[in-house]
Length: 260
Image (tube, rainbow, N blue to C red):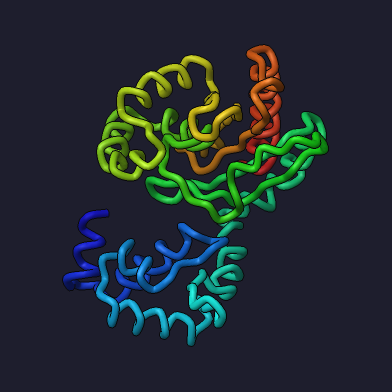
């Protein structure tokens, strides 16, 4: 991240692209309330004139929106359309959509699917079950570093040790915002490998327990994952096992039928 920010602010081979990425990433951190120009400058490190000029260009091309009343900037609706196209990367969302609905109906809780993008994962689907108390910790489009959340932890634990070490080192600054240090994450990776699925109990969102299982390619590389999230009272250890097995069964059946 340091190199990207450096090229975006101070120059570099892909300065223009880096700056647009920096701005859109900043706007995505506040999807509901948006950001004032001063907030954008603070988050990105860009000066006011540069940030305003680039934001004006993004607004002109509908990659960003500006609320006329408040002056706040938001990710543009055009991006939403692109996101819909990107969420079907490898056809995974379309492939697993029926399974996500089955799991939501069977257990009554919230089912998520995220797809790996480099050292992060993006939530591409959220299906709410009928249980009245919802644990809506993620919105479609939200990004988190690998290791943060049950799906991301399950995918990280499925990687070779050398890659885990690299991702943990590179992702250390991003994980600080979640209060998850290496000393906390390492035992979670070990536990996930022992269980065959990830459990995150109250660590990311207080009172919420989530069980996640990775979706692997034939070569064992994690490309996505599915999780079920519920209030802690509904996720006692025996139910966690049942939930994890149900997710794993759905993944296995679809992977076999599709040749994933």
